Structure formats: structure tokens, C-alpha cells
Figure 1 (cartoon, rainbow, N blue to C red):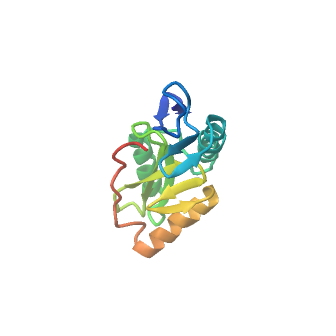
Figure 2: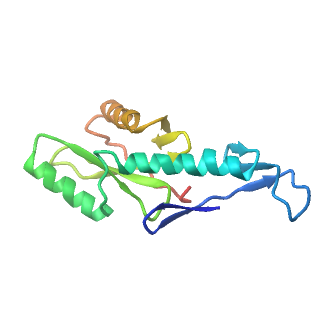
Figure 3: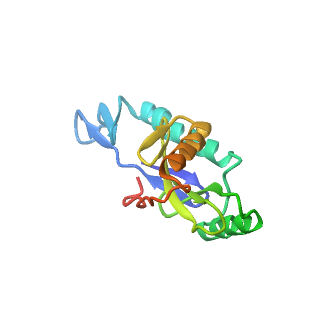
Length: 164
């Protein structure tokens, strides 16, 4: 199944069909990763449309910037140079990994930009292995992770490997 995540960004979702009556029918059980659905309508509503709502929530957030990774890094650098005692963070779509956003942050003007992948899931967002139901929880979770790791995240996360 393929769905449009953002302008010119499409995510392909592998759907495993189980309990098929024959090779021409849709399976009675549809599995996407660890999520299981009883029919195609349920998969579309509870998985695809749920993720589309989370993408809309992310794109409507005050911390979202419709910028490329390079442009976002330049924006954060400019911001921290103008405000040397303050750090900043923003989200932007990751077009090379559909279903993911960049969470890019800079602790202050002396630190490099750090990028963590934020994944859209049907129930919300996933960041650094933690799940968050909405943008407010995601932003607060990010701040907690930074506080626990010091200096707005000394640890760097590996980018996703398969885009899912």
C-alpha cells in the first residue's frame, strides 16, 4: 500500500495478507508490522488515516518548518548566533525516509546541530524508542531526553535504515 505523506513524499507500506480464501482474495487478516487489521477498510482508517492525521498535526505545529535539512540547519545556526545563550529545535519532513521527520536542535551557538529521526506511527510519534501520543507530548519528551543526556543531546541517533 502506498500513501502520500507530504508533497512529493510517498510511503510504501508492506501489508502481509493472512488467512486468504484463495490467491485472488484479500486476506481476512492484514498485518502491518506489529499492527493487525481485519479488513482493508480498517487498515486504511486505523493505520493510514491515523498516520495522516499525525502528519497534519506535525505540519501544523509551531515548531515545524517546511525546510530542507540544510535550510533548517542554517536557520538554527542563524538563530543561535543571534541568541548565543539559547538553544533551539525544530521539525521538518525527511523526504528520503517517508513517515519520518527530522528533529534538529542546537544547544547554543558553540554546539553543532544534532538530528534525531521522529517517526509517525498510527498512535502518535516515536522518538529515541519512546512513544508520544501528540505533539505536545513529543516536544516535552524531547526536552526530557535532552535534560537526561545533558547539553541538548550529546548522543546522536542513527537514521532509519528502511524508511519504515
